[in-house]
Amino acid sequence: MKATLRPMTATDAAACAAIACASEIGQRYGFELGSLAKTLAAALESGGELFVAEAGGRLAGFAWIDPRGAFSSAPYLRLIAVDESVRGSGVGTALLAEFEARTAWVGRDYCLLVSDFNVAAQAFYERHGYLKAGALPDFARPGITEILMVKRRAGEDR
Ligand SMILES: CC(C)(COP(=O)(O)OP(=O)(O)OC[C@H]1O[C@@H](n2cnc3c(N)ncnc32)[C@H](O)[C@@H]1OP(=O)(O)O)[C@@H](O)C(=O)NCCC(=O)NCCS
Image 1: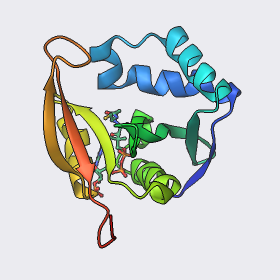
Image 2: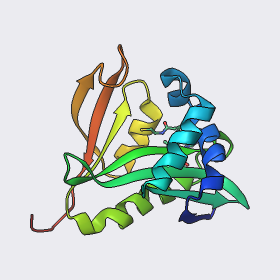
Image 3: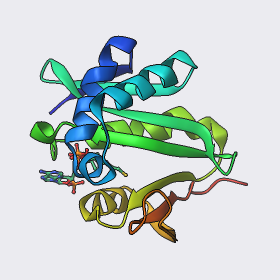
Image 4: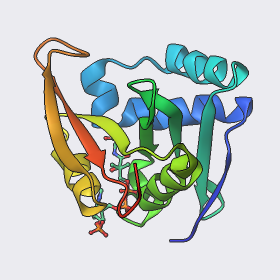
């Protein structure tokens, strides 16, 4: 399915929050629709970098990125979620590629955290060149380990 990417706008915030809330991470982390929508809108308002993917004429997913959010130096993928009804059709791949393209100028490895239970997302990132680089037990929620995954920038001077 062909995904078209564009910047997120304030009117997208509720629909994006709904996608994240419906996912397993939303349920395990107890995301709340209204407060996540406000968080996304506030992030936009303060100049945060958020973009959406549209597929089949409707909003299919989104990503929230921070170009230097990892260790105040490296690109960090804060949040990515695709509507369950279109998962497995390339939308996540398009969002991940956009994250890397938009932050390539930073010149550091791409970083993200993924929950230990989220094995489907771990496999997705591994297929796109991310390697497990560490584990943070109880980092965001007690009983859940966050796995640091990093994609090396190939063949460039550091
Ligand atoms: C992780 C996530 C963003 C991937 O998005 P996606 O649109 O499904 O990704 P893609 O379609 O580009 O690729 C998914 C891969 O899984 C396969 N797949 C098949 N059916 C699938 C399904 N129902 N769900 C997910 N992946 C599926 C695809 O074939 C593809 O394999 P490939 O890379 O070998 O081609 C998405 O599953 C998601 O939103 N998960 C819930 C939120 C979440 O966990 N976010 C990550 C937080 S760290």
